[in-house]
Length: 504
Image 1 (cartoon, rainbow, N blue to C red):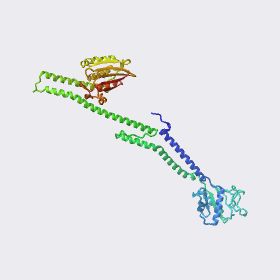
Image 2: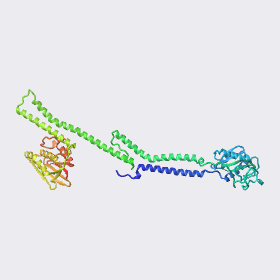
Image 3: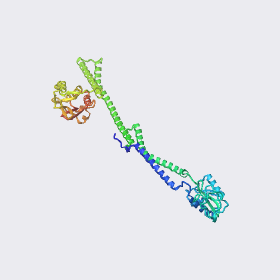
Image 4: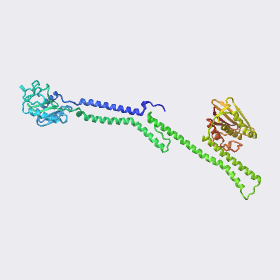
């Protein structure tokens, strides 16, 4: 499996995605905080602000003594300016609707009560300090300018220049027709009081939106591919080996889907192999039953005839019947022996011990065994070994068995006057052994099946003598156990050639 690029990893995408979304949320929250701070005043209103508000409210009350203070604040001032109007008649009105501290209201009421009934000029006065009572105005009705001596009863002593300071912030009197009617005092709020609720709402909304977006963008596509993998797994579990999962993408989920699809493909191939093996097993049972039934039927018929009490059989006939029974017995023995041999070869229960095998000796043993049969059938049996093909690697007993079967098969199908040749050639890294006859040949439609168990090409081979039909299957099993291959070619009336290729 090729190494995956780090940026295609699902784990990296999850981690990086959440880091980016958290950074985005933090950035948006910081922007919201900056925007809110530009809209909200953190500290108390400035002295100049309270004086201006006191003057404007004084003028408005002079014109309309029944003025709605809350409506006045709403129409003339922004809610972000935290101020409170404490009136002599007991009204307490906040500009932003937030109730002021009780001690702040109490202090303002004390100041208003101390200055009630005294005469004042038209302008709001300045000077004084915390806790000062209202004294008589300066000459000319002008307010103190803040340059007087220390404050005390009977005057606005020398407070800070620019406005009187009450606890919690600056304050300014509301003068209506020369009478003190109230006081404007700043309503200080902490940053949490002003920004906390809004920031909480914005923060929770951003977190909910950000995490939902991250989940959809990161896990949305992955969820679809995992669902496809789950569906394919259920289909495979139900027996549908054609089901496949989506393989798009380059992350771990895609690798898992590809591994799953490969596994499913391998399972499909193995299932097909099992079905083919089962078909072959059934065919083998049928073929074995058929091959064994033929001699058994003949033996049973002759034995029943010999055992009949009312039938007189002359000695020559009895001897012929017994000879047929013996031949059929040997035939059954040969079939069973070939089946056991083929089972051992295909089951790999015996090992192949390779060694240097001189082909001249191997061909000599084959010639010696079939020389008499070749002479009786008037068939010429020849051998030839090209330079470089003198030695082959293999098990001499098994290789001789394969060549004996091929030679016997060739002699069985070669008419009198024909020829059977054993030839060895060197080709690259292989030793090629050929067994060629000059018989009637095999029809092309039969060639792909000649190595199958019990397959016989009776219609295409004139003069054929009965065989077990397992000899060529044994040859193929022996050659394949040696790591080689075997093939066949044939032409009508020009003979057949079997070719064995063994690694050198």
